[in-house]
Image 1 (tube, one colour):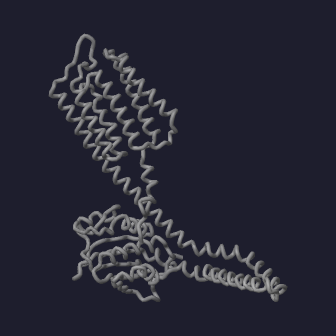
Image 2 (cartoon, one colour):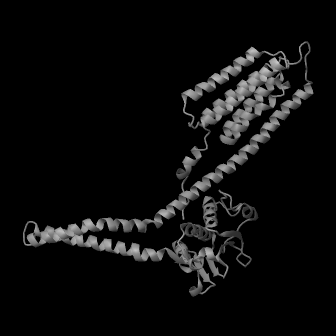
Length: 435
């Protein structure tokens, strides 16, 4: 059971890029907010401030935003370099407005952290670090702004130096905390999104393999009529040209090959109608045999223990997700086992349980706490073999979609290997009881 390659989910990573329309809308919000603030302070409160300079910087940002809206489609997804450039312009414009309106004395100075937080949630870490260094530079420059904070006419307000330094520290620490938090949350969301996308790809692949029998039946049905016509014409040609030295042998060959094609289509039809119908239902013992068969040739003995007699075992519908999920768990057990893997099945009146145990080293405590997360890569800190990465997440997700409950732990016996228990309600695994 191989995991999907990175190329298969690269489209999902590309979809994580920020859309231009998102940044454009945020910029319009910034333009409106800054314009309204300057207007209220200068006109309504009547504080003197360099409104022409502020209006020019806000106007340049609005013009550039309008140009982006007209020049590029709103659905364009920006490369990290382009996103960094736009966020740098936003940071520079806001720092410029703050510089001429009191620097860090301005109560809106904490808004400088917004571009860095946006970058941390959507961009690679190196771009966010670069934007963070620019923020430190701009905040430090604002500390020495020569322009006073807009205040009542005829008076001025000078903020104490200690408070300015405190605001400088507050902006940087708030930015760092919010950026790290946003980065971790977005990283986990991205990993989960990619893992779920890979899960969908695996399930589609398994379903396509299951549907091949139906395609064979359709092909046999469609080809049957023209092939019958070819056989009929070949018989007539053989009757007329059978003794002809030039064409007789070729005609006989043509007829024999047509008959061979009809036999092949007949077998395909039989497989797709009778055998395929039988393959839609799968007893529990047959399910386990299908799951374990591909892993019996790797030097590890696979022991199957059936605690329930076969005459009373559940018979369920074939489910590609269950087959893949159990197969991945067996593969992991084989990879880490020393000598053998034990697969135990039990069908009770109310539930069906499949347990997979190996005689390896088992799970380390820290890994047990993280099982179920995508990209958990090993059973122990000292193990570099891998085997518990995206594949285990996909297996767990597919089995849980089928209604199963999974529990992971270590065996209490002498071997002390890993132990995985998969449990379903009986009605989910037994077609006769589901009716």
